[in-house]
Length: 303
Image (cartoon, rainbow, N blue to C red; front, top):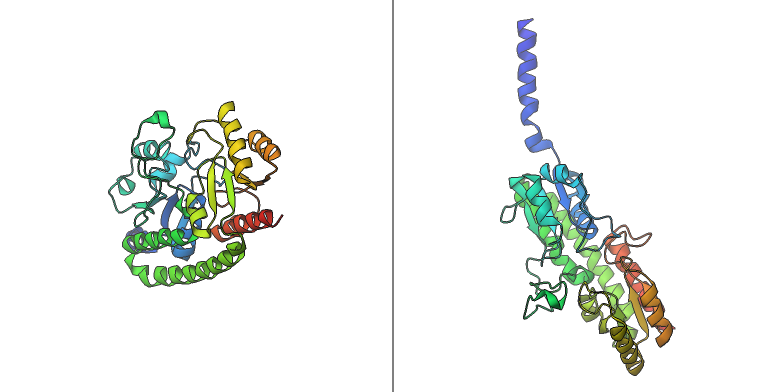
């Protein structure tokens, strides 16, 4: 009996150390595009959960009680950065009481590292709206910049589990090659519409517009996070008519009424475009999301 108990104790001790090497890396991402990148890079070595489902405003993912234990157990938290998640992530990290994923720790993975942001404000006065003090954080809508996020995630995985470094790098390279091929397709599809003008509800699209040669005229919001006034709507309609703007983009996070009114008044085509995977049906991966965005924009501009 003593021999049997000793064996059980020894087995328990051995198994107790096994998860250090065998357990999957627990990854929590703020947004669904980051979750897709993490799954592609991490493969079988990671377990990935996203706080967002795809239908939310990236700046205001609703905080759920279930997020706190999820983050408490996480090995890595992966975020877009540039203060995109300022309204919900800092409070969740504080509540998680997880030292591994706090700012400045290896488990805090800011995917904006290496990205040169646009629209960095000269003032952070909040009378100017929901100001992003580090610049526009919606760089993931440029698939070339998304490649930087993928590489940052890979680097974090290698640091967290160097024994799987070769697998992570192989997965990264395979995904980046696939993404590069799709970028060529998307550029070819958008090439006939270089210089085409459009407006959107929120300022999600400067990186997308720059990548594909479009002219981003303005936003329906008066300022970031501030609803339009009747005067602003009237001025925007006048500007769109003067510039013959053919497209109004509504992101799923915003109501349709005002964008539909503006499209009707200007003769523009109203289209709904997601800002991350899952924002509309059949866009559960980043590549599917970008396929949808490019195809929808191109088809609207053909009219």
